[in-house]
Length: 343
Image (cartoon, rainbow, N blue to C red; front, top):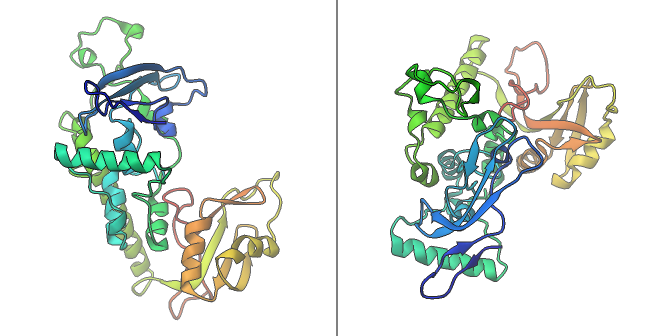
C-alpha cells in the first residue's frame, strides 16, 4: 500500500512495500530477491522521491530497477519498469490510440506535464486510493475497444527483453573480460536504430515511441496483406458475419484433453446473450450464432483467450464467403491463434 509523507521536509515522498511490475520484468525465476531503498531517486515523470526496488530479472537477465513511482504507474495502469500496459502488454501510445479510435476517449488519461497540475492530480488519486475507490483509468468502456485491444494483446512473457545490454568495449574490440563480462558480446545491428534511444517520458505520455510506431506499422501491413489476399481470391474480400463468432480450440490433437460438446459451448456463451445456433467444426472449433451483434461482440471480448473444460480457446468474428464461393455458411477468420488473438 502506498503511503505519503506529510511532514514539511518530506512532503509527498512515496513509500511502497512492493513494486507494480509486469511478469516479463520479474523474469523467469520464480524466486526473486529484491533490494529496497527508500526515497532512492526521483520519479522520471513527477520528480517525487520514491522507493526504489532492484532485482536480477531471471537467470540470464540483467539488473532491473523501477523507473517511475507507483502513483504515476497506477494513473496510467502501466509497469513501473517497462512502462507497458499491465492488462494488455501494449505500449501506452498503442493502447491510447485504440481507445480513442473506438470511442473511449474518456478512458484515456492525459497526465499533466506541469508540476502544479501534476501535484494536484497525484493528490486526487491518493485521496481516491485512501477512500477505497478503484482507479478505472485506461480501461476500455465498450466491447469494440476491448476486442481490438485483445486482438493486439501481448500477454505472454517476453523474457528476451531482460537480456543484458550490448558491450560497447566488445563492439570496439577492446573488451578483455571474456566470459566474465556482464554485458552481451554481440555487434550492434544498426547504430542509428531508434529503439536504442527510447525515452521514459515519451513512452509514458505516448508520444514518439519507436516501439509503438513499429507495432502499429506492422499491424497496418498485416491488414493490407490480408485485404490483398482476399482480393486476389476474387472480389473485395469476405465480409464479417453479423452475429456469428468462431471458437477455435487452440490445443487440438492433445490426447489428454477431453472432447468439447455443443452443450459445453452453450454453457460457456449463454450468459452473453440468446444463442441462435451452434455448429461444430469437427474437433477444431465451432460456430456460435447469437441473435444480436452486440451479444456476439460481448462474447468475443469476454471469452477470448479463456478455456472450456481445460482446453484453451480463441474467439473471433466468423466470416461469410462472398456469393459464388464453393462453401456455404460462415468461415473461420484467417490468421493464427495466439498471434494477436486472431483465429
